[in-house]
Image 1 (cartoon, helix red, strand yellow):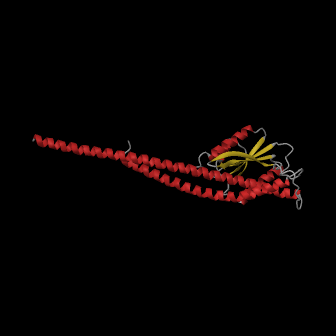
Image 2: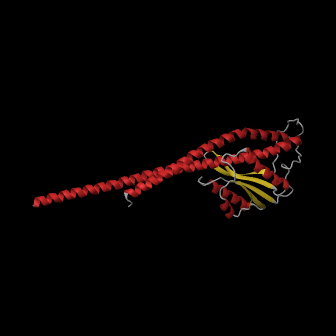
Image 3: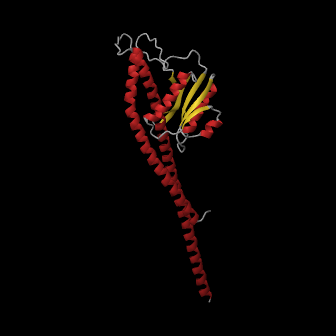
Length: 287
């Protein structure tokens, strides 16, 4: 059994770990609130953009917009994999990588990936996923400029014909957990508008479709980045909460073990004193 000094050293080490995990939990909580605040501000604008697109798609739609026009044949598919910036967030990153691997195994067309996030460059390469480009320099709360660079690159991939279909793959935050999802980004699928309404467009519907479809793609990419970051912060906060609780339990167990060892030592010392006193008494009686 370890002695009291070894147990004290172990308790001190666990207490240091608890300080780290508790600090990381507080940081993740702050980042989660900031990202959720940004996402709540973005959603009304994105929803309004969808409604405008719905109005533009009302009735017979015969558009020549590149972002809404499917390619004649799907030869190459681009998967946009959104991962975290770092680890220590439970199974968040490994789950989305496993989900992406499942999509890749079922994909019958030629495909490649565009990775957003710093995590797992080596792990992604080991899975055999062909990475066309990485966007590692994403902040913990993405901004419009960051998502805009990604959206512009993806739109250029589609317009140039290097990708015939582009799909977003990320973890969507739902309640008290995350769910891996895939959503088609390009081509933009026309939204079925409300029939029976006649709209007047100024300057004209085709010009508005060109602007709104472009804006719609930007919003979808931005929303996906914010959703993914929200899930990452929540997963890390949960993981650090569990780690902190585990250190508290370990400290209680070590403290109990130390007290047991101390009590055993005291009992042994008392027994030795009593034994010595009894021996002296017997010697005096015999003398």
